[in-house]
Each structure stands twice: as structure tokens, then as C-alpha cells.
Image 1 (cartoon, rainbow, N blue to C red):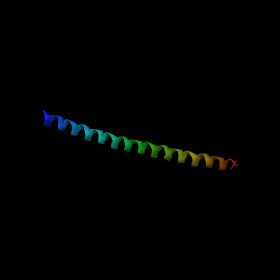
Image 2: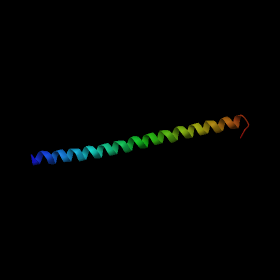
Image 3: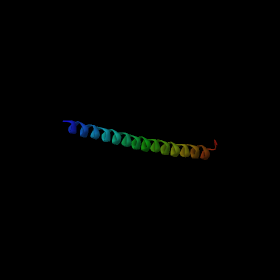
Image 4: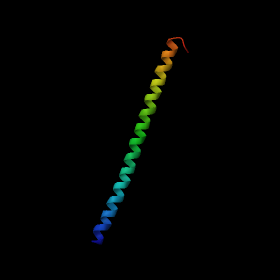
Length: 55
């Protein structure tokens, strides 16, 4: 029973670590997408203003 509980604790710890790493990767990917899309939109917006003679 002691061996079973130690394996259970070890699996829970490694699962928790995997969840943290996966969540960090997903957050970084979403942040990258957000900044990439906002940068593209700012570029298109400034280009539109330049072509209209506002900027």
C-alpha cells in the first residue's frame, strides 16, 4: 500500500508539471497570435490612412 501511494504521488506530480508546461506553451502561442494579428491590423490601418491622405 505504501508503494502504491508513492507511485500515485509521483504520477500526480508529473501530471501537474505537464499541465503547467502545456498551459505555458498554449498561453505563449495565444499571446504570439494576438500580437501578430494586432501588428498586421495596425499595419493595414496605417496603410489605409496613408492612401487616404490622412497621415
